[in-house]
Amino acid sequence: MELHSTNNPQLHATFREALFQGLPPDNGLYVPTRIPRMPETFVRQAPDLPFDEIAYRIAEALIGDEIPPDTLQEIIQRTITFPAPVVSLDEDTGILELFHGPSLAFKDFGARFMAQTMAHFNAKDEGELIILVATSGDTGGAVAAGFYQTPGIRVVILYPSGKVSPLQEKQLTTLGYNIAALEVDGTFDDCQTLVKKAFLDEDLRQNLRLSSANSINIARLLPQIFYYWEGYKQVQHLGRPVVFSVPSGNFGNLTAGLIAQQMGMPAQHFIAATNINDTVPAYLEHGRFEPKPSARTLSNAMDVGNPSNFARMLHLYGSTWNIMRANVSGFSFDDEQTREAMRAVYAQHGYILDPHTAVGYLAWRKYRQQKPGKDFGIVLGTAHPAKFQEDVSEILQAEVPLPPPLQQLLKRNKSAIPMPAHYESFREWLLSNYR
Image 1: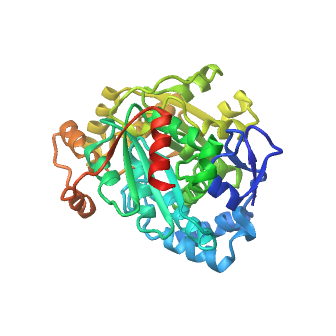
Image 2 (image 1 turned 90 degrees about the horizontal axis):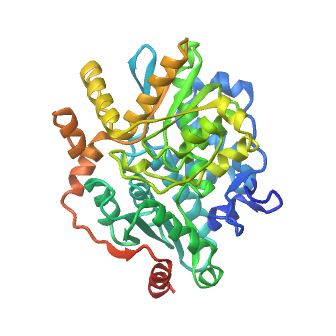
């Protein structure tokens, strides 16, 4: 697999190089030099293929011979150990439930795939690999679960103090062993900035082997392509155009869907659904990308004011606003609208939405109002509502039972290291603990 930087098409890397580097040295993002198109026979056969077989064929088309077929098959089988069902709300709407993995969030797919591929390549290397990851909520829990006790790999998770749910924080801070949690006095954007600065610090990288598990890392993003195909296959028999509504923060999830479409998945349209952190919907409306400080909301994992993966979205469309806008619509909603959607869906369908999925549902309904037709909407269900038990129970005035994995979390003690949002403090901590 050949990749290059979004900032410089001449700056190339293999999949292995991009996996461990995380970011190119020019501060761009790695993107595939060529996006392979799946054959029409694959599209027709998809409804009869199991999820892991779909994932394997897509991974093989993307990665090529950098990972031997037998090894890649094993990686996929260790990654895809839980389903991604489409649950119908009504005749026009389905929820693609992506929260049946160990951390109960969609990011389990990417984190587990990345952990397996890194373990494969790292087995031949000497020295410890340090994974840096910034999280606004769900990424950290998925990465912690995916990399827990992986030999030769240590994980450092940066999260904004007071801006993740209690259960999310438990997922980040209670495993120990090879997982360290830094509680940053700032926002998610501050956490992400610290990670990016570390990757661009040549002196630091001379002393430490660093990589990233955020969606800035191409290996976290690629496996998210798998479940778009899995979702499409489940509604293909309807014979209707399919629109994906994607709750979005750092926009890796939507970017994966756009790549799936370019690989041949017959998606009709995509919806970028955000909370009041509406940088991308504003761009789609006016053609100006104007990052701003993130604002705290009920859907905290989407509280991103300067989404990193927007650079990849621009690259996919040749930085042409009109072309992107023709394929992607953007809508934003505030917390009260989110609460009302959660109440309405629970009252009408008996289905409990988490706040993030509720934003995706709102965006699909708004799109449908503006463009009525025969489309079937698939809303990405990005997290289990029990991860936000306190908020969801209060909003719905109903009990949200905790699945067994979350019940066990409540018995564990938090262990996090306070960290100011200053790069020198972060850098000094890394060198003191890992050099």
